[in-house]
Length: 387
Image (cartoon, rainbow, N blue to C red):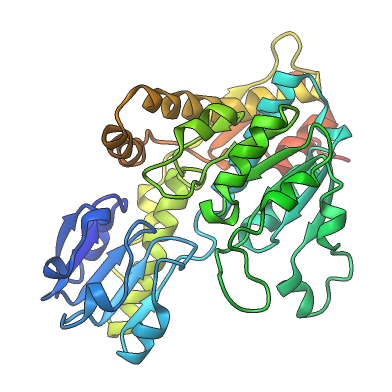
């Protein structure tokens, strides 16, 4: 079989070479000529997959190593009897850890205790549910809004959007949809932003168009009290650098870019492809995972819970580093900015999830052990962990 794959899918060569010849190409530049005689197409969110790309091709299976599918014309694939698989939840842990890092970075910058803040989580799927768990472990009071999930029943604790708008921090974890009963395109518009309470924090790691970026830019010109964290942008890779200058932290769509999350995505679409063609599984991501790294928290001041948690989180992932990299694009021409945005994603340094760090107890107390364990760090067995 001939397999065309986005060059930025990790270990795609190792995995899919067990099925056939793998040709790596830039995902954003894929065209119909590239895939015409391919049997399998493997993409990420930067490639639009539908009739324009696939018509007249031999492609009979498409795999997207992402959690979303707004870039895929699923109706067309179904009509053409083309197999399809995505990777739901593959980078959910990484994206949730991004939110934790952003909250702690803002807490350090502005001098607040996260435990004194109320959080509104919009969307409680794979990512949102993990954000709920991790922020709750930080002692934060979390409210959840997810109308589609609530409509399925069993979620009487969920609240409406008006109640979410009264929280201190709002974080978005919804798919991008333009139709249906609960569309999310420009869910956050000028009216929404106008209702944010003074000093509110808004975080978007979902899709850029969930927020009306123009309305947000206008609002931030008038409301300097708001703090916004954007990992996703309308018009990527041609982002609004004027908006970038107004947000607290801006990053190049890398919230889910942990090595572990990427490898899960590759493994999920590889397994699905094997099942589609009735072939044996001959590759596993397990062999690509790194050994855990130790981190000691027994230095002076480590008994302070917030300080110690922040140190562990920033040791694993510090959102401020990615923010600094993205802001350098403002010095470039528009075309250079587009290329630079994609380069930051393609050449992204290896980042590991919290689970890959083993925290050595040292002088930690039970409360700290509990918090670190419940936001995802590895704590040696036998270490006290009480609430």
